[in-house]
Amino acid sequence: MQKALAIIRNHSGKKIAVLSACSGVTNLLHNIVSNLSAATSAYREGNLVVAEEQYVSAKNILDEIIVLHREIIKELLPKNSSLPIFEFYLRKIRQRILGSALLRRLTEKNARAIVSMGEYLSTAIFTEYCRSNNENVQWLDTYSILTKTVTDTGFSDSAIDIIAKELRKSDTLVLQGYIRKGLDGELDNFGRGGSDYSAALLGKLIGAAKIEIYTDVDGVYSADPRKVPDAKIISNIEPRIMGMMASFGAKVMHPDSLRPAIEANIPVYIKNTFSNSPGTVVRSNEVINQTTTSIPSITYTDDITKFIVVKPSTAISALSSFDFNDRFLYTASNQFIETIYVRSEHENDLIDILADKGLDFQKDSVTVVLITSLGRRLSFYSLDNKDSYNMIEQSNNLSFSIFRDNLLFCVGYMGKGSYLFESSRALSEEEIAEIHDIIIESKQTIQLENV
Image 1 (cartoon, rainbow, N blue to C red):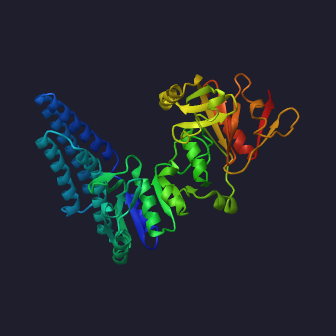
Image 2: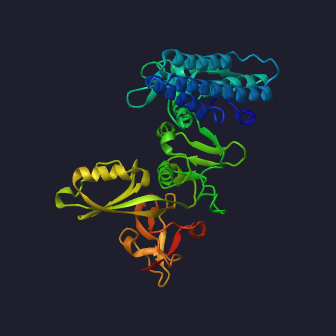
Image 3: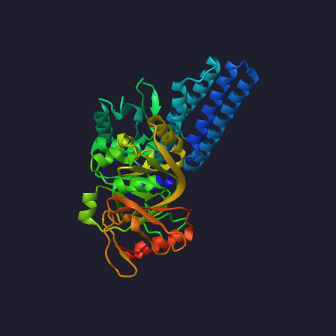
């Protein structure tokens, strides 16, 4: 929280700070819900002893949460500081646990509310911490601002008026990420990673000049820095490229969580809470092309199953209606076969679809590598004669020269200067690092050999 206060002080003008729960707290709240759910099942089965044990476990976890927050309060705030909002939401959690015990069941409404309480606790403490350091801040309940709709999340009718009123009185508003009002009017949440989406929505609502999201990494890298020591920070990236990187194994924020800001053309800065790195800016490709020169990147995953589907003439486009951006990563088609790359976790989903359509298939586990030039088309040539190749037309005849024992074949061009390669075996960290060095050093040229 000290770092968060320093970040606020480093920015002039009116600000909205959106906070997640303290580290580990949301997981603990989910554990409470799991205990209450287990107690409900035990009651249904007539096992009162097990049910009571589960309720005791839930209360013990709450005690753990209380101790964790009391330690933070002790470290940050003067002795005997008054925290009425914090105490109010602690009582709310206790009441919901007690309510489940009295009713002998956990309602969905209660479960949603319990896992949403961490943000209330963290923002209550942070608000008082800021005030104790003479910052003009105001705590605001996100429940009164963001509301679930049938298809997405919108804003309450009075949202902008509430925010405008509070910003006239304060330099900074402190709001909870993750939470919203549900369709039933009860407390609801966005699920994992929801705080980023909350910030994007609030930024869109007020027409923010920019949104900064602070994490524990310096930004989006050209490769996994844990495996490729020379990985570089990508200064600017387009949402679609970032989405492809996330789909193919990169540990990056998925752009869907930033969609409201992207739609509003608000630049989103991904920064490190604990360093002064400038981070990565997520914004439209048009802006990137006009203002910056970026670097290529490499992403890979070996958790992929490749399906080769034999299509009868009556089913040439049988699979075209499915959402390949979600469950199925890439599909290539001709008159007779369709090749589909799917995350292994969704393998059975595709098998069910193919069985329903009566289509024959073969499948195999593969490693895929995504190489992107971040909007610039890479130039590919042969080691022998340096003849240029059209990537799309010659894709089946190209492979990386450094893999002489088990070549990495190009599957196809993904658009936006991105190319998908396949290997029949997992690649070592040394091999990935070597590919990375090639594309970083050459910038626009990758050496290939004709096979």
